[in-house]
Every structure is written in structure tokens, then in C-alpha cells.
Length: 77
Image 1: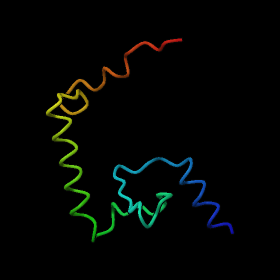
Image 2 (image 1 turned 90 degrees about the horizontal axis):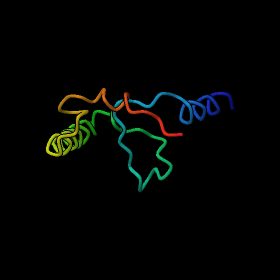
Image 3 (image 1 turned 90 degrees about the vertical axis):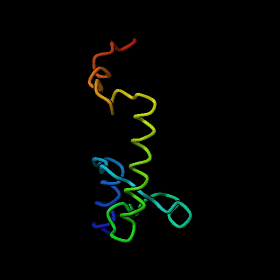
């Protein structure tokens, strides 16, 4: 059907949302993003906080500043 094919196209080629959270036991193909569902908001926020704390503790420049430098590295050919 037309709606299903549009959804498949978006899943494959659309922009990724800022947050993604999947129940891989019940959704092994990770089609149903739970990140913006009210009942999963706490889990999403907790995981987001843990991720950024870990990145900051490792002095990741995308978190502590200087992340634009990644765009300046020359490409190898």
C-alpha cells in the first residue's frame, strides 16, 4: 500500500530523529521509535544524561567544545 511504502522510504532515507529508543526484543528491526512516547520519556532522558556524562568524562570535543574540528580533518584517498 502507498502509506506503507512511504513509511519504508522514510525509515531508509529520511533524516534520523534526535532521539531514538527501541524495544529490540519486541521490535527487532527497530521500526517503532519509542523515544517520543510519554511512557518512555524518563528512560530516554536517563540514557541521554548517562551518554553525555560518559562523553564529557572522556573529554569528547563534541560535548566539551571543539566538535567542529571533526569537519576539518582532510579526507584520505
